[in-house]
Length: 378
Image (cartoon, rainbow, N blue to C red; front, side, top):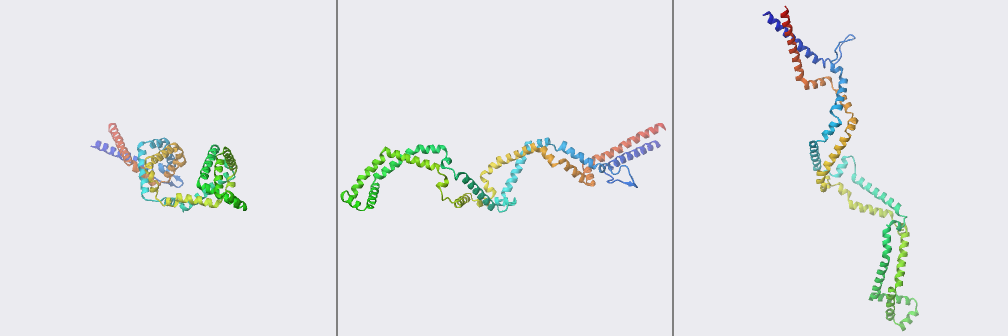
């Protein structure tokens, strides 16, 4: 009976010591939070392990996250997953369509971006651009000759067309003077010419007659027009005038050019054509309606693909610039010890209890061994 009591007592004492020792060791990971002093002497093992090494722990966890958890390679693998791409496309498309359903206008959207009076600012911007472009073009072309402004091919084509133009002029003139209207015009011209000479008109009327004179002049005019020399003369005149025209500048051709009026007309035409105010008062959904399907099917996937490639390519730089290691370290250092203990216990509570029980079992086993040795040697 005494032997059984001895064994039971020693097993119990061993289990209590083993379990309490492990429990105390676990508690000493966090407690005490602050060092304990007796006079000037600091009590050993105070503060606890984690409070004492919190800065080193935070630094190591930060390095662990950056070097082994959130790495450029892991980000690249995640971004390359087809499942993630499809989920992101669906999410982005749903958010975009939901935003469009609110019916926000382009003007309201720009105002939300802190761009006040977008209609007025846009019109002012466009007018300034038109004015600047107008002044630039005028400065470049105003004093240049017409020959410099038009392509060489155009000038060559004009020169080739001069004989044809001369033929057309002669044909039109011949047709005109062959008609009754032309004959009447000849008659009127002769009358006006002779009337200015006074008595000559009365003399001609007496001997020839007005109609007879017109009848004689009309075929002579037609004969003159159909003469080869007339065509050559007309071709020469047209070529000469074209050469003069090519040598003249726009300023010489249009001396009464009014910059303010022309610029105002251009700006007014542009405003009436584009109608900026109408555009800004339309909803974004209405504006993009013609290309909405392309946006959903092509632009959104393309945009996400482009963003994914950028993140994949620059992930290392992004992690470095965001200083992830420093962020993790600062967050852990900012945790209160109570919060840090609660976090660790919430994760490993069962394992820590099992460690306590294991200590008790080992202590009991050691007590059993000791009891058997005592009984054997006694």
